[in-house]
Length: 367
Image 1: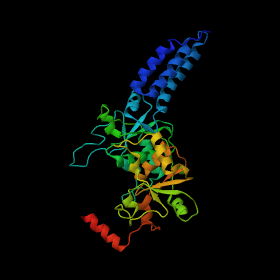
Image 2 (image 1 turned 120 degrees about the vertical axis):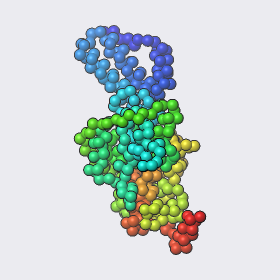
Image 3 (image 1 turned 30 degrees about the horizontal axis):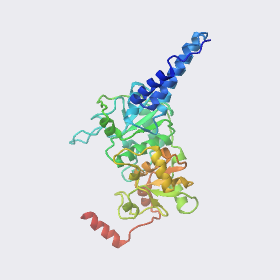
Image 4 (image 1 turned 180 degrees about the horizontal axis):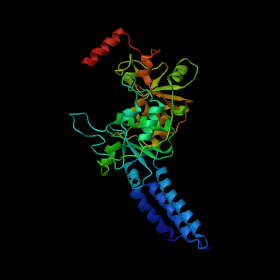
């Protein structure tokens, strides 16, 4: 048996550095695994042909899986682009399919999307107009998953969105949270969305992909979910958690409210940390290291349980994503219905303005 690694360490390192520059560290890592294993496989001269074939397929599997393992929970355009040559990654575009009648068809799925993407507008993951944060039923979500052609909970999925501003990221984060709560394990968000993809010089396609429907059944798991009953228990002192309002301060203080909310105000005992704090100078969210540093500075990592909420579970999804997926803090949950659901149910609230302040807020909104 003869063991040989082929090219010198220097030439191998040079090749890997080149691949890293072109495709990112995930591609270089996968290439190293493949190249090393391939040389070991084909230079074991006493191996049987079938075993050699088995080793080869294992090496190819490592090449594919290792590259994607570097993508989540955030993926840049440069990291995602090499994955388009394969067939294992499903890109879900959550933008509107087309513009409303009479409007110019821009920033929609049909106006241009990443090649091979499947369209699942954000509304498929949202509740009715009077309670937009309400969870869809397991049956409705199962239908969405099946129509997208998702066949396995381990199937790699990348979520793309427009990337127009920091609020836009909340849609991608809410869909990510929903899919994770349904049991999907290989998820990533395209950081900066379609705008970042185009700015990086990559092309869009107008060809429509038609996935073959699956038979996969899914249901929401409670691991990252705070139900209205869970929040009631915290407010009543029967459970402990940091109730974190993701809205701007004027919402938390009761000076603004969502149109579907019964009244302004926030959850009792809550504090606020605006969702926009996780972003720099553009719509791309900060990386994991920066998110962890910010979470530590705010003391969020020291809490036993944290419940993220906002008006409708949209901005709150950004806080959940940053704290749970980027900062790596355990036991962070999302209250999907948030203040619209809570206020319309008639539960106690804090910072509710009195008649004089309510009148003053209405006057300010007019002028």
